Structure formats: structure tokens, C-alpha cells
Length: 232
Ligand code: UYC
Image (cartoon, rainbow, N blue to C red; front, side, top):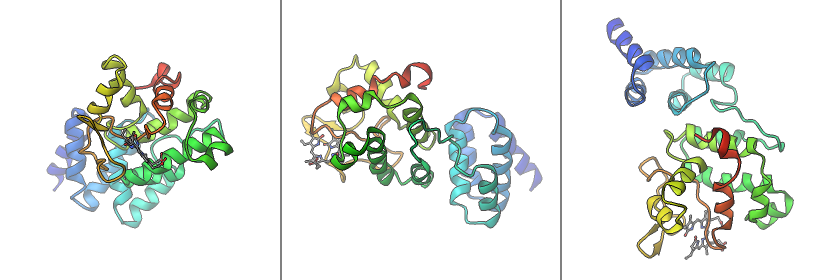
């Protein structure tokens, strides 16, 4: 009914992020009426920098199977909510798709693959990174990967989140591992089954960086200049 719709529309546009998120979840259960509101909402916000609220609204429309939402997304957001900028000629479309689907495990694997692509053909064959390669990543590319994770995880996942926690614990790795659920007591969390591949995970849990060869790669990732200007 119209009153109910306009009450939801008001919550969606003027509520706190928490209220907006709850409203999006409610709209997701309402079929076409909910989708109509979410489409209007995304168009209204399109000129502003995206937040995870946009990501969440997008995800609902992305998983709806009506022709109308498909056409809408194809027309207005053909490559998603996050601009897939690259200065290194990398295509992030498939990462965008996996994160829009909330397939965090596949997205995590693909993230490592994309970082290896950024590092070059030697890393692509090796399938892991040297920290010196990470230092040469462009800000633009790291920011794109990070924004994709942030915006499709309610702001919970991404290198910038890990960095924020790392700085808050005085760059103490052991404290970081326990806060982000990579270690519990003396035990490393085992890949892949012991990790949490959904939003119930602790903040900063994903994306993973294998610590088998030491902390230098993650140290380079978390101290990269990409986070100095606009790492939220
Ligand atoms: N693994 O334990 N990990 C792998 C993590 C460690 C190990 C991949 C993260 C500790 C081996 C990812 C943690 C350790 C392989 C991660 C973790 C260990 C492997 C797949 C908590 C033993 C097989 C991508 C810090 C005590 C591959 C990749 C190999 C894989 C992630 C063992 C994403 C965050 C120290 C034997 N682990 N990894 O990198 O290289 O292969 O032999 O960190």
C-alpha cells in the first residue's frame, strides 16, 4: 500500500546507515514493489561516491530475477556500483560479479589472482607475491580492489579495514591475527575450511593473505600509499 511504501522510502533515504540497511533487507522481501523503490534510490544517489548502502541495494537487485531489474542494472550500472578503474590494464569485472553475489570465497581466490596479474607474468606463474612487487602496485588499482570489497561487505572487508585495525593495535601482527580471526591462541586458522566466508566474520577477516612466507607481503599491502589519501 502507498503509505507503507512511502514510509519505507523515507527510511531508505533519510535513515541512519543501520536503518537504511534494515530497510533494504525488508524491501528485498517485497518483490516488484521493493525493487522499484531500490531502483529509484540507486538513481537518486548515483552522482554521489558510493557507500556500502549502495552496494547492498545493488546486491538485492542483482539477485532479483526479474527482467526489469536486469535491464535497469544493465542500463544504469553496467559494471556495478564501484568504478573499475585500472592504471595497469586489469579487468576487475569478474571480481565485481563474485562480490555482488557475495561469493566471498571465490572472490578471495580471484583477488590473489588479480594481485598476481598486477605484479606481472612472473608472479602469475608463481601464484604468490613478493613484497617488492606489491610496492609497485598503483594506488588506483589497489583502491579499486579495496572499494569492491568494502562496498560489497557492509564496510567490513578490505585491505583498508585491515590497515585500520593494524594501526589500532600498534602494528602488532599477533594482535591483528587474533582480531581478524586468522589465529586463535597459538593456532593458525586453517585454509580454507576454518575461515568464515560470510558477513558473520570479524571485521577485516577478508581478503586473506597467506602467511606461510612471512609478513612482508601483507606489511607492504597495509603500508601502501594507496591508503593515505582516501582509504576509508
Ligand atoms: N592460511 O593459515 N597455507 C593458503 C591463510 C599460514 C598453508 C591460501 C591465512 C600458516 C599451506 C591462503 C592463514 C600456515 C598452504 C591461505 C593461514 C599456512 C596454504 C591459498 C592465517 C601453516 C598451501 C592461496 C594466517 C602453519 C599452499 C595460497 C602453499 C594456502 C591463507 C599453510 C589464501 C590468512 C603460517 C601449506 N593459505 N599458511 O597462497 O603455498 O596458496 O603451499 O599462514
